[in-house]
Image (cartoon, rainbow, N blue to C red; front, side, top):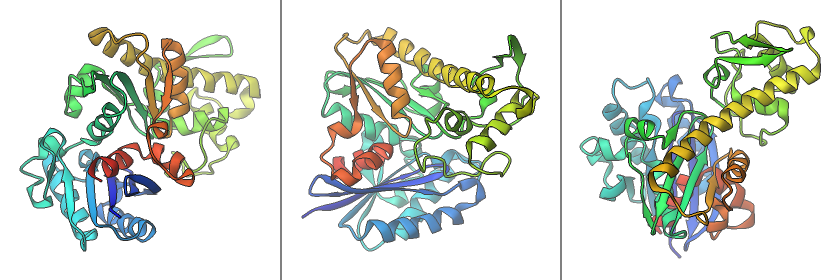
Length: 340
C-alpha cells in the first residue's frame, strides 16, 4: 500500500491530507499564523504529523512565503521548505514546483518563482485530470482562486500571485479573514448610504456568523477585537463598521447589513469569473468545481453563472469521514493524489 501525505503551508493554516493507495483517508487543518513567527508553524507540523501518521512520502506546497515574517518571498520559500523537510524527515520530502514538478527542499530557493503560492496549480492539475473543461473556484479563509480548465489542461493566464491578481484568477477575498472594509466602501444602513470606518473592526467571519453561514471550526483565528466568537459578538463588531452600537438598530437592520457585505463578496468573485470566462468563452456545459471552506458560496456563484456545479470532493476517492475536510484542504488532497 502506498501512503502519501500532501501538505499545504499557508500564511495562517497548515493543511494536510493522507492518501492510501490513491484514496484520501484523513485530512486536517491546524492554525499556524506565521505573523506570530515560524515557531507557530513548527508546532503545527508536530501536531498535524502526530494526527496524520507515518508515510512513505511527503509532498509540500505553500502560500505562506508571502507572510511579512520574511523579508522576501524567496526567503520565505526557502525557510518554509527547509522547515517542512526537517519536521517531516524520516520519509522523502518533495516540494511542489508547478510545471517543473517536484524538487528537493534545498532546491526551493533556486526555484522560488515556481514554488511560491503554487498550491492553486496542484489543485487545478488534479481537476483537469477529471474534468476536461471547467472553472475551478476554491474559496478559502483568505483568498479565492478562479482557474479555467480547457481540454484537460490548466488554462490560467497567470502563475505568480502578481500575474494572477492582474488576470482576475486570484481574488483576495475569503470566507473568514477578509476585512469587511475591503469588500465595500459604503453600505446601505437604515435607509441611507453610509461610509464605512476604515478600521479592522470586523471580518467576513463575523458576517457569515451573523447570517448562520459560517461552517463549524472554519474560524481558527482570534476575532479582530479579541472577544467572543458568537453572533452577539459579531453583531457588535459589525456595528462599529458604521460607527454604531448594536442598540442603535434592530436585528433586521443588522442582518440586512451582513447580507450586503456577503453580497459584495460574491460580486467580487463573480466579476473575476466573468472576466476569466470572457477570455476563454468556456462552453455553457462546463461546470463550476467548488472547493474550500467557502464552497457553499461558490455554489451560489455557480447558480448565477447558469452553469452546473460539481463539488471538489465528488472528484475524490475519499473515506466518508474525510470527504468534507479534504474539500476544505483541496490543494493538500490534490497533491497527495497527484503524487500517489
